[in-house]
Structure formats: C-alpha cells, structure tokens
Length: 427
Length: 176
Ligand code: HEM
Ligand code: FES
Image (cartoon, rainbow over all chains, first blue to last red; front, side, top):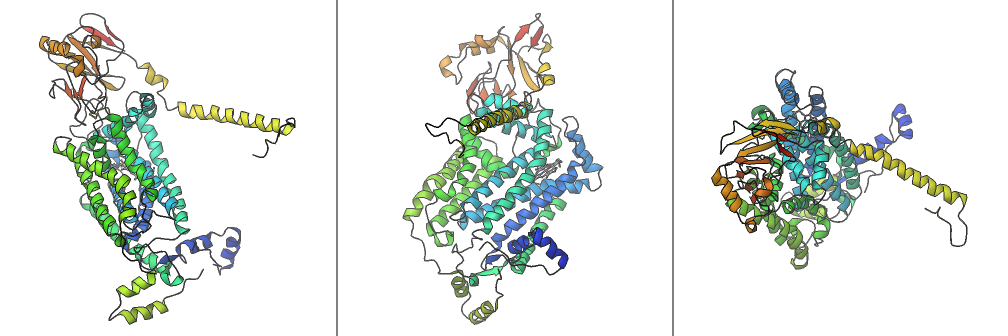
C-alpha cells in the first residue's frame, strides 16, 4: 500500500534531478498516485484542513514576529502597534489569533473522527500516538502564544498554568522558579515563551511528516473500518481527494474568514486588552475556549496534585486508547452500544467545557466532578469491558460491496458501471 | 556493543580501554554542555539582586490591607484589629488544613505580613472576602483566614510568610 512509485519524469532536467534525489517520485506516490479508500466522507478532509492551518499559523506568525517585541514593558504596546500602525497588522494578528481557534476546532473534529471510526486501532497505533503528541505540542504552542500579547489574561493564564508544576512533590517549587526564570512570571518568562512559541510549530511540522509517513504505511482507515482488500476499494489521491480536500479547505476558510472579518474578538477575552498587572488577578480568569474542558477537570478535584494529575492524565490516556479499547471492530457504525457511550462521552467533554467557562461555585463544581468521573470511567472501564460484552453488527465483506449496496436500486446499475470504469491506480 | 569482548580469561585489550575511555569522556562532555543549557533558565544574578524592600507602615489603618510588590510578587500587609487577632489565635489547630499557630506567623500580632500568592496556582487572593473574612481566591475558590491560613482547598498550604521580616522601627518594616 505505501505507494512505491514507478514515476519517471519526462523532462530531461527533472529526470537528471530525480535520479539524484527522488523527491518528485515521493510526492507523486504520496499525494498523486496514493490509493485512498473510495468511501471516505468529509470527516477525512480535516487532515488537509489541519495542514493548511499549520501553514497559515506559521506564515502569519513569522510576519507578526517582525513587528512584535518580546520584552515585558514593551510587548503589550507592540501588539497595539501591530493593530494600529503596521500595514494590515490588524488582519495578520486577527488571522493568527483566530487561526489558533480554527486549528483547535479542526483538531477536535479530527480526533473525534478517529474515535468514532476506530482509527487508533491496529495497525495504526503509532500514527495515533504521533497525533496525540502533535496535539500536546499544539496546546503548548497556543498556550505560549497567548502569553505573548502580555495582557491580563496572558499573564494570569501563564501564572496559573506554570504553577501546575508546583504540584509535583518535593521539587515542584524549584521547577516552577526554573520555568519562570524568576520568582514570578516576568520578563524572563515572556522571552523564553517567545523563543519556544517560534520553535514548536516547526517541531509540529516535523511530527506531521512522521504522522503522514505512519499513515501511508497502512493507508487511511474509512467509515466502515474495513481494510482495503483490493484496488477496487480505492481511488487515487489525485484528483479525487485533492479536490475533495480542496473544497473542504475553501469552506473552512469561509468559516475562518467570518470570524476574522466579522467577530474577530468573539473567541477572545476583553481582559486581554488590559496590560498585565502582577498585583491584580482579574475577577474571573478563564483560559482560551479550547482548554476549557481540561480547566474544568483541574478545578473539579479539590486537591492540588490530584487536579493536576487529572488534567495531564486526561490527555495522556488518549495515547493508550489502542490498548484500552478491546474491541476489534473499528467503526462505531457497527458497534451499537459503543456508539451510544461515545456520544455520551462527547457530551461529557462539551459539558466540561461549559463548566470550565463558569465560576467554580455550587452546582458547577458538582457537575464538573461528575463529568470528570465519567470522562475517566469511559476510558478506563467502559471501553475495556465493552469489547467483551458488545455484539457488533455484521460487517460488509469489502468496501466496494458496501458502497454498491447502499446505492443499489434505480441507480445501482449506473454506479456499478461507473465503478468498472473508474481509473485504475498505478503503482 | 560487540566491543566489550573481554570474555572471562582474556585480558582487556587496548581497544576495550579506548572504548570505555571514549565513552566516559563523551558522557562527561555531554553532561558539561547540558548543565549550562539547563542552568541558564534559572533566575539570573540581576533577579536575585532585587532581594529586599522597605515599607512605611505608619499610614495603614487598623483593619486595612496594603499590597506591595516584592520580587515581582504581591505581599499583603494587614493591620489586624483586636477582634481579628483574637479570632486567629483562638482557632483550634485541628480545624486547619496546614496547621500553624497564629503566633508562629507574626512577630507583632497586629501586623500580618504574607505573600499574596495563592498556594494553589498563584492568583492574588482578594482581601476581606470569604467566610473566614481573610482572603478568597478568585481563581478556584480557596479560602484563607485572618492569619492567611488556608481553610478550604484546593490550595494545599497557608499563604507564605516572607523571610526575613525585620521591624526597623515601629513604623518601618524591611522584607527580604
Ligand atoms: C502551531 C501554530 C501556532 C499557534 C497555534 C499559535 C497560536 C498563537 C496564539 C493563540 C497567539 C495569541 C494571539 C493573541 O491573542 O493575540 C499567538 C501570538 C503570537 N504568535 Fe503564534 N501560533 C502558532 C505559530 C506561530 C509561529 C510559527 C510564529 C513565528 C514566529 C508565531 C508568532 C507569534 C507572535 C509574534 C505572536 C504575538 C502577537 C499577537 O499576540 O498577535 N506563532 N500565537
Ligand atoms: S489559584 Fe487560588 S484557588 Fe487556584
């Protein structure tokens, strides 16, 4: 499956080049001839959308860095300077700030897709784990980026999150001071966060290469969760999936543009337009929306170390999913009980997100505790047991069988005819 | 590592020696380069130099709390009323999460000086708030009493008392 290519360029210069560095063949086999399951739905376009978002963040980020000053007395003003004085600075900053949110919307859908269709199961465990690592690096990058404008939310978000490390027994306080480079979040912290915020996206890009490499060994999973059995089950990446991904990226850009041009501050916090003040904590500090579920878990546990463990554990557990889920059936479409549990779990995560946005009083705390419990119960108890008790539905023998049977009837003959005529995949 | 071939009986060869010696120097070399890379992140000399602050406390009315900045962090100076002092001293240690007597936290009972950094995750607690009338942390709801001792989590510890505190005169105090 990993498309080894027989691609030979026709142009003599390219031929000369290709025989020395076969990179055109690599691109051809990975993104042109690569055989993808023919039944992929639009949830499979989010990989392409994520790649687009990474590039968008890097491009806007590098140009912002040309105008931004990572110094605690100047940072806030330099962002205002970007907004008011730099040509199109407002656009670049709004694209970058909202781009981070869009990036997370896409990654959450991408992860949910993997959970629903069982994409983490053998033989895709490494692919999945690389994804979890990318997700962690994205969170680190976005967190450090949010500190850069040096507003009140930047400062206090940084303080609260870095203080998580002080929960580590014995060495916690020393580690926190080391991370800060001082006795509190300050100039040293801002400076190092800027350096790392610049660095991490490129590390993410490197991991994305590994992620795609690991994807191209077994090939993509698909909505049926049935492996590709023959060439008939696949279509070449180009033009079928380049166009499908392209359409999805354009639609996503429309959605993204709506935020950038019409409600650029909707996802942000007004407090971040107040310069950082180390002596006053804003009345209600909340992280960016994409961290809210984890924030709710942190607050749900009335013990400092316990809360921190819940926070990190909730993400680390995802890496173990291939072994926590004991069912061999991939797609939730064929797992009637898992499907219900999964939707409940999605609802629990959304509920945690809501709790994270509210003040931690009364019912909100209890609700966060119940939902946090359920988050872990699902992963640690429901998933391992379900594999033994659930009776899955009957799987189709091949992707082609299933595709043809759903379109059977009046148009069935036509579809069958089209299938036989579908271009064969060379390579 | 097929190099460690010195099977029992055969004396170590020159190659074994070179292998181990190179490995050892390499390890020391890596260590000596990594340490500066780690250490550079710790507070630098200029940060360490900003150690102490002197405060004039003559204008602080009984009942009032004043916040000053020390080493980048807020410090609360609270002029406690007799009622507050009594409350703090009468609290049984068995009621406390992080037991400490009020006497162990103050030099003069009317002056409580604590770091304004919540021991949970570092927010600045709000004074005269919460059921113990000490402080209430706006971030995750930790409650502190009039001695700055934690009474309700998630914070695990009492507000820290900065060290050293020296009363230079009756109206002047030096912190750090
Ligand atoms: C994974 C990709 C990235 C993500 C998720 C991300 C996220 C963020 C976020 C959330 C902010 C705060 C925006 C605000 O509220 O103002 C920010 C700011 C910033 N980022 Fe990034 N970023 C990424 C890549 C980059 C790269 C590659 C650079 C290149 C140097 C960069 C440079 C900056 C600069 C200079 C700022 C401060 C200006 C501002 O606040 O608008 N970012 N980033
Ligand atoms: S920082 Fe004070 S309660 Fe969390």
